[in-house]
Length: 179
Length: 152
Image (cartoon, rainbow over the protein chains, first blue to last red):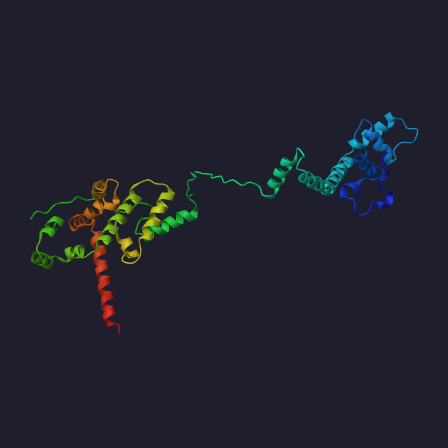
């Protein structure tokens, strides 16, 4: 059995995340932590419930199992599990770095080349240039708003045209004067 | 009006004599810069399009804006307002002249024909507003020269 590391009632200070703080009882918080501490196995949730203080010494595994299932189905517990898993993941970063460092130092390890390549990809990602040709076929269309029509009217007047578009057209024919 | 070919065939004396015998209106055309003649024709042609063709609001606005962009040194807003839209005969003449370009405007084939004294004179007979513009231009130039002489 894992040594008790679970939070006591008075330890629920500001170090807990919002989802953990929202849990109504310390037992539920302890259950969330216990889920991560108990090794994966057939009776993991039962053990976690026991560690959190659920049931009594006489409680059967089946009753503890029902309790654990109810706890895991609780939305508040699920939110707390998600939050706690993120905290644990961040806490694993130093361990992961040490493991990676050891792997990189061990040239005979079969995973050594992949570790080197993976690290290089993170440090200096390979770049590629892609040329994208976009054929822009948008046609601007002037909408006949009052402003546009007024602008047309003003321009037509200034150009000596009838704004209504019926300016006088001089019709005629060329007559060659051969005198 | 004399043709360009006849003009080129003249000797210097004949040319001087021809210039001396020009009427006032002919003198206005002969001394009008080619670019100015061309702008007058283009403006008249565009105005014809504006008053005869059905077009979208956007095209109409674009053509009118284009007309007003021509206003500048040598071509005033008054000139623009004075020019009347081209008649059907003139438009046909423009169309025929432009066929000479055969897609190569940079060769100035249509420009040379349209702005020659002979052709422009014909256009002017069809559209007297061209002559009005030339007269107005001559008057404004004379007054500008006069005020220059008077200024200290």
